Amino acid sequence: MLLAIEDLHLSVPSPEGPRRILRGVSLDVSEGETVGLVGESGSGKSTTARAALRLLPERASLSGAVSVCGHDMAGGDPAVVRKVRSGLAAMIFQEPRAVLNPVRRIGGSATERLVHVHGVAKAEARRRIATLFGEVGLGDADRLLRAYPHQLSGGMLQRVVIAAALSTGPRLLLADEATSALDVTTQAEVLALLRRLQREREMGVLFITHDLQLAAAYCDRVYVMKDGAVVEHQQAGTIFVNPSDPYTKALADAVPRLPQRDDTRDHTMETSA
Amino acid sequence: MSEAVRVSDLTKTYPARRGGARVVAVKDVSFELAKGESLGLVGESGSGKTTLTRLLVGLARPDAGTIVIDGRTREGRERGRAARLRRAKEVQMVFQDPYGSLDRRMSVEAALRDVLRRHLPDPAKDTVRARISELMDHVGLSEKHLGSRPHELSGGQRQRVAIAKALAVDPAVLVLDEAVSALDVSVQAQILALLNRIRAETGVSLVFVTHDLAVVNEVTGQILVMYKGEAVERGVTAEVLRRPRHPYTDMLLSSAPGPNWQPERVAELRAAFAGTP
Image (tube, rainbow over all chains, first blue to last red; front, side):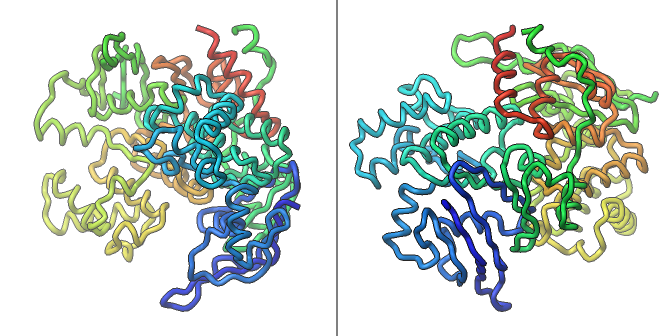
């Protein structure tokens, strides 16, 4: 098991008494598996993922078990936390522009973990990132490494961030709304890429999204969260068909749908291309 | 006069970087929108939909073509306060992030009063107050929210305030630029229902600018698909989405996650499309 979270409770102090953010969350992710975590704003899905890396406020009080590749993250042993964060797990976020330093060249940001945490020589780190750029479909690595974030599109930047996340060979990837800011076509491209990389490396992916359609179409299993608790856990294929929880059903009903296509001409693209 | 918008052969170019040809953002786009109707404007980033809306609201001037809104042709050189206020009554816009369009220091009431003072012919206290309650009622907010500032409201409530502000001047056309994209699905559904109701009650025409085809399907009667600055497909939303004629529309449709969606297939389609001129 790459990620195992069991009965995780989390609360932060506030003037009105402790605020309970998570109320007994249990979930797991195995090798090669894509697991969706769906819910609306404030449901606790991001906090759950951050707990896996122990990216939590200092004052938060935590109970329950969190383990990444068998390492206990709930205890908070600094050596273990460092080991997991620096190599075993990586996280990508919605907005690559918020992750990359705008006044630093792409090469500097992308090789940061390799150089400063793993002590890889700069030239070697750049070579490894250049190879990864090729794998995520970014050409002309030399020019890219010298570019600044504002010179690239959102889709390209997200690929840069994915390449940087993969540079340390993580076993577990936490994707927090990683494609939500992209156009649907770019989103599909990035996801196709992510799936290929994941299969090649047998990574486990925790895929956080507010998009129920996307989770159902892309993931193997889906957890639905509401108010800090998991209310539903199902195979992705059946989540729309027979949601067991009324909240999941309400969510599914709220999702706007496309009409059925008249697919008499399935191969339009081939004929016109 | 039953048309709210008539746009003919609109073209807009921007100067390129050193030496290159001018960038064509919008090229020969024409469409009409009847009063009380709704239009979906779809396309990827860079397709020209934002430039087209900027032209509509008067934030940019076309190089060629005409815009007629509510029966009045937009003049080439409109300047000054009077023209600006008149344009504001023709077209109003609601953006994706209401935080960006609401002044954080102003309460809901102050924000609405500010708009009404500028636009009402008779800005007497009583008329303004009556109109404010009417607007709050329209967008489904209660009187108790009048004193709230933007940070005290939820995302959906903030978007309702932005809509109320836009409706305050009773515009002929309301342009919604990704206005529901950042909202949770349940809130999104509420706002879409609200917009439909407002359209029925006030007869305002709606233009939805979005990359979300499912949203367009739920709330618009007409659709305009843009690609590289050109309108590649136009028609009745339900028909276009069911039987897309242009390969670009077809590709956009297969990009949307749903049953049988395969990201790898979409990537192939897009690569094939990028190869066609």
